Image 1 (tube, rainbow, N blue to C red):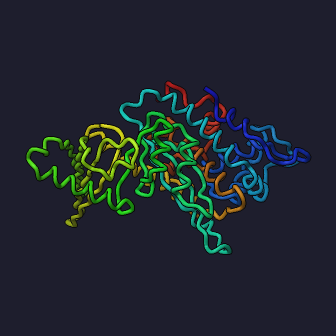
Image 2: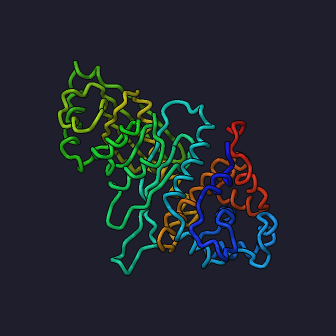
Image 3: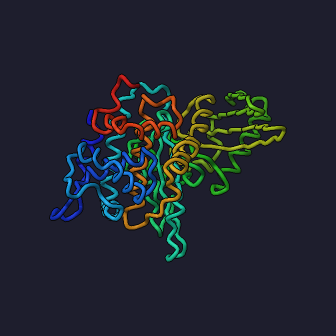
Length: 385
């Protein structure tokens, strides 16, 4: 397996070679160090690098005359890096990492979801808020890819682009209701993946038919035997939650589902919650092209929210992505991808897995050599899983 630095060396530098003061790979490496030590933008990254200048001069054999790059240099570089090529390198790196963890039990699930970078709103061009659509491998808890939503487009057109960039072979793709589109389903199937997608009013007829069919099966004695069921109860700290999953695999009677390629199963989830005496109930319906147990579907639908509760939350709270104002050319995409590299490294680092995220970053900052092996050595190796 190659180290991260070996993958980064494959990224082409778009700058004029004359007069270059810092190699592209060195710039990216320094930024990874800075972000994992708590820096959130080019200004703070540049200041951090200046404070640790001697360390990086020795580590990367930098020219002492030029020291470390300025904030303007960093922003200019990330604005012109080929975002698609950077994404391809990222995807190849994390794919090799994932292959080291070949002993994943059960179905691998990939959650896809969009996230706004609100501080980068373009107030001149109608207040456009940039969106990045990301893919997250829930079983390991790592980011595996992203695409930026074009200004004149939306998530529906961006999701197929993302699916083209990542390997979903044999995985179950989960998306929120915006992804329950025939074009997206066809793309998943063509990429040899599977899906478990929610039905809402954006697919009104299918939603209504599935809802009615569940009621029919649940209330018909002869049909009820077709219903598979699983229940999970969680209690603690004044909170009670009961999650129920119902599965029907005989769906020949539901004509409105024929437009969804390969659909074989319909799923209903019911979540009951009681928190400090307040009760709530939420029902959802899903379609899938695989036949799994109610227990397995319950886990898959539950795991989808990891992309929001884990990845997006960490990016905003600890990496301050929602406060990023960079919006020149490819800067939004490239800096977002750089944060995901950092996110993956921090999640895969076995030496800090028992520490909270903020303490992991403090640990890295206390001795920069704690980060050296993550970037320059072959990592992670099979012994760390």
